[in-house]
Amino acid sequence: MHSRFTALALLCGGLLSTVALAAPAHADPAEPVAASIPAKCVDGTRIRSSPPDGTVVGLCYAPHSVTAHCRPSTATGYWVRITDATTEVSGWVSGNLVKAVGWENLPYC
Image (tube, rainbow, N blue to C red; front, side, top):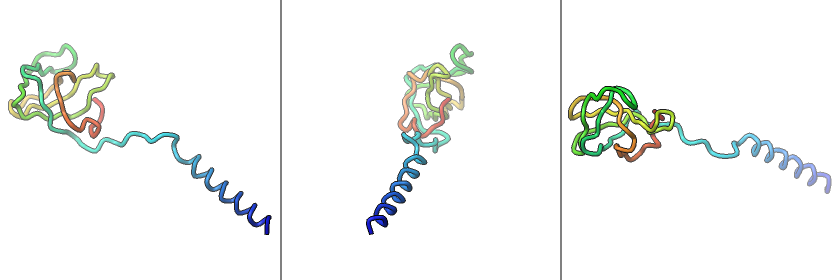
């Protein structure tokens, strides 16, 4: 009887360690789920053709209807691609001059 319990304990322990080894040590962040999210610009934000010194193609203002297409990343120097639906201008703005709720749902720029 003792050997049955030992065998069962070894089997269960082996299965648990297999499951523990198969699981990642930490959870990976969720995959982005949105193509864009609503955002707001600081008044007078320059919309550029490319970061950081691209041609200014428009200006964004707080009351404008703006959509962010990606979240800020150090790879782009913290720039964000947006579309200003009010003026129908798309381009790049400094991530410090645009605010949005839900950045984590967007891919990095």
